[in-house]
Amino acid sequence: MTDFPNFDPNTIAKPGDQHNPRVRANQAAFQNRFGDFKTRHVVGLHFGPAPKGEWVGIILDMEDGSEVRVAIPFNYWQAFGNEYVLAMMSAGEIVQAAYGQEGAA
Image (cartoon, rainbow, N blue to C red; front, side, top):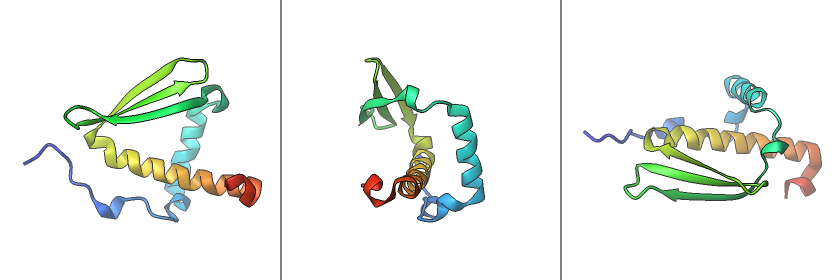
């Protein structure tokens, strides 16, 4: 048996899932915990795999010249992907509602 988890296609985020009350509650809790988004502005983003593929690394270049490095282990890949997709779907809707088609482009 492999150490890699089986990905379950049934749990992959789909359009509309961002409206699920549980997802909305999780996003509201995240926003509260995160705080001021503008003070954590990223000016560069880089992704890459570990040499053996068991991690995906992310380097965030911050506006102040510093960088943040994080590594996501394989057992969190599906959760990371789902959270990312749900956040992007929600953010896209919020931007479009706030700014219209021009702001969403």
